[in-house]
Amino acid sequence: MTNLNSFFFTMKILSFMLTIFIGLSHCKQDNPFFTSLKAICDNTLHPNTCYDSLFPLIDSNQNTYDPYFLYNTSIQVAMDEISRVNVNFMNILENIYKNTYLSSVLESCRDSMSLALYNLNRSLLTNGSALTTRETRTNFRVWISGVGADLQTCKDGFKYAPNEARDLVFMKLDKASKLVTTSLAIISKIDQLMISSPENLSDDHFRSNWEPDWLSFGEWKILDTTNEAMTPDAVVAVDGSGNYKTVTEAINAVPLGSDKRFVIYVKKGVYKENVKVDYRTLNVLMYGDGMNETIVTGNRSNKTGSVTSFSSTFAAYGDGFTAKDIGFQNTAGPENDQAMALLTGSDRSVFYRCQFEGYQDTLFTQKNRQFYRDCKIYGTVDFIFGEAAVVIQNSDILVRKPLGPTAVITGQGKSDPNSISGISIQSCSIDAAEDIGDVKAFLGRP
Image 1 (cartoon, rainbow, N blue to C red):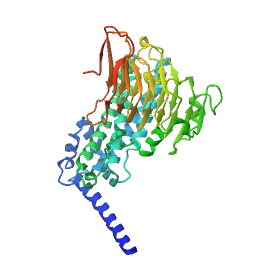
Image 2: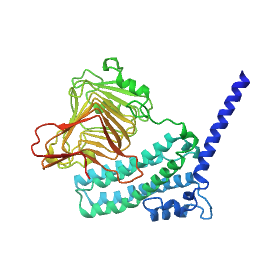
Image 3: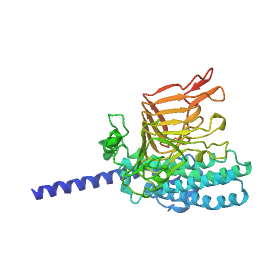
Image 4: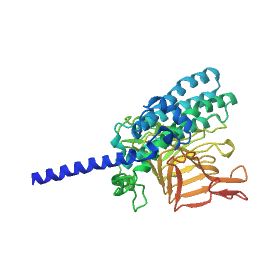
């Protein structure tokens, strides 16, 4: 029996190695895409930038090009450019502009570039065989798509900046953005070529149920657990009956970089604070006593001096963030332009039985994979917007009266055809939150 088990184990190893070999060969052999650098770069959105950045770093005498070397090289080139921009032009702007608004914009940009570098770094390959799994390829495509969103967030912050500052930012970030799209084009092409490899023929990436394939059974079971049955690691209560009085204090208590789920119970009450979940704060589950009972509220806005990404009442960047039975508000009002209740760039984030109340830009689904179910979303203009791959299910979308004659529900920001991005609204109701008179409401923009 031992010998038989050993035989089957050996056969499994051989089968796995054969799958890797065939998958890699499928990418490199007899494929015109990898016969010249020009052929590769011609498949990107910016062929000249692609060629000029990669040509000095490769052996031009090769007959074929290793797709994994090219992919990693393109990532490293993009990281170097973003690092250079972050250090050089940020210091220049900081010395020129001393006003409070520009300081806020620069701080937002520094945050965005740190996030961009983090996502590019984790998209680097340690070995070529990692790309034989579709999950890895999808992760890389999602994260690199998010880098484009980070750079765009930086640009958007300069909307009300002096023209010379805005022009400088756009010029400096132009090359970085093009290099990121090059990396995204290469990994997307590799993914396309490997779709028909043996690993993918039997790989099941879809479920018959409503939940996304990246939401594990264990995670869904936690969501389905009654709040009374939960065992929190921290309790927040305005009246002092918990471990902390503010949500921020509880978030700051989460160990950075931990893979362990950290559960925070936020008791009934109104929490007037602006909360940020750092990208190093992972796997937080935060639940309350109901979307109308546990409320996190703020009133920051563009008009009151906050750059859009800093106007959010609650911002979640750490992967695996989950919220349940909580309300998020921004009470700035329609006259104050962009004012977000929630910004999330958390990959694989889930919001269950939550409420988002605001006017313009209520819900900023900035990037990565997000899932919303049984929620309520209120707003006036572009109140569900961003570049995430987001699914909203079984929820109420409620249009408030805007200042102008038109309300627009979604503002999807996809700018790269290779990015994993889009808004999917399934089994939801769309209605007026109040009497909106003659206002015309549209689901999206043309």
